Length: 263
Image (tube, rainbow, N blue to C red; front, side, top):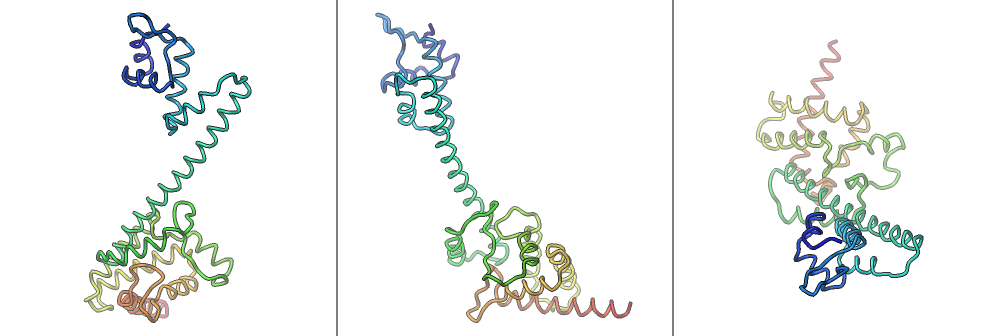
């Protein structure tokens, strides 16, 4: 037999909790003496350990009582009941994991959105997050959406490996930093030396993630251009920024072409 003190010592459960479990009928002592002292049996200790296990898995006391309250079960029936219950708990954990994953993604997307836009635009940011709320997450991110047959199968294969907003891919962090530097210096001429240095960094970054496919790079970038209403498929890529990046890249690529011809 185990008294309350020993049960507390063995399991870490407080006296108050043991009394509460007794009150709700979840774990009653094997013997209550005339002086009010409580003794628990070996089976009571095992039951308490089961309760603690189920609590650690997220079960409520009501669910635990239902699971452990079935009497006169055969060993096989008890085994099946435990397996079915734990499988349900796995489904619950997976749902919780997906929800947490989506929350992490939304928070990271917000950080990236602020970085690309250069300022906090609460209304636009809220609209962005709302638009992503019900999109399906794949491997921790929401992949960009394009109409069918926009790209060839080979192009889609490359695009599937691109870093996207909201991901923890370090390549996206580099891009956000580059855009931030460009936006901060847009008052400078596109052909100025500091801007051309940024253009070179952006080109090499882009060419690397597009695996050397310049044609796909140009095709993809053109799809980021804002439409007639000024909206871009990617948050933070406004008309002013896109036009400036296009001008600075044209200057850099023209210079690169000249150097190649001289060689």
